Length: 474
Image (cartoon, rainbow, N blue to C red):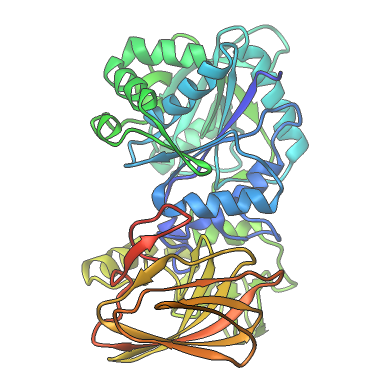
């Protein structure tokens, strides 16, 4: 059995890529570069000799992780559900306890799910070099060879080479994000790398060092994994134990304190895609240096990023601009000011709007729905139910629903009746009536749902039975 255990951290809200990235569907689950999402690309670049991955995510994203791994025909060793976010040191400790219990010699390859790495072969070579070092008891991090004096990254200063020609070094120190002048000095010295946030070490060694330097985190995580519960494809961490765990990054908790830290340089076209300008720099561009996606026509436009989700976007006489069009929000910004997108997201939160939380199209474990239209007492949704999937058995106190099948076959429970509906057939579900919807067919079920009533919120659901183990919105 391979001792190589990939750990993929799937947290983060990706607010800097709003409006495409949102809390319930952040950038790691979006297809930015090709037909695969950033999470899927992370999985696809794993070393071939690795075990099935361990994923760490939250409740909101659990079904997206499960679905995107299923699309690749990849089986997860575990999908750990954090009840609350506690930063990277506890998250990695959870996976270390899981891996160590199965294999005392387990070596963890810890990766973020939202990084872009262009040169997979170079990355895998560096990962395998780090694996060999980890088997010797060292805690390895990857240092990105800098291409510019970037002020948005932390840095790692290398020390002595482990052995001549090994291209692996002792870590001299970790430093915070610097001012520009300091960053220039770092890059000019040739001794500093960007801090990638990727690691390789034996699960046992990480837990030993964590116990030495942060016994409070160690004990909370040990207790959290002692009282886990399996739920379908997921492992639920003990809520009370993990909520009591201190919040800390792996750098502060372990890597800056241990005398076993080693850095392996990585020059593989790495980018954490932390802004629209960073994404623009990674994408293919036309003769005018524009990166476009979707139905876009440009005239006298240069050095810009134009992203259209589902309609024509045209530009005239623009330079250095970012335009991102989604069905319910549009961003127009100077490329040099995109770091302030976070201020827009904060304003949306403060005014209790929902455009930072989810898209008009919302994904569920059974499929998805698109809120096509709405008014004071009505809402229209286009619903897609995957083959074999079923919405929960439920009822509503404040709304009635009318379902019209567009394509496929629907198995419907409406009160005491159960029947099939096919194309152009419909049913009406009065307020307070217990009902359910299922797709028994071999193709997706498409239908239109018209809701009417005094309150149309997603929390107006009384759920009686659910194959996905949910207790809140559908």
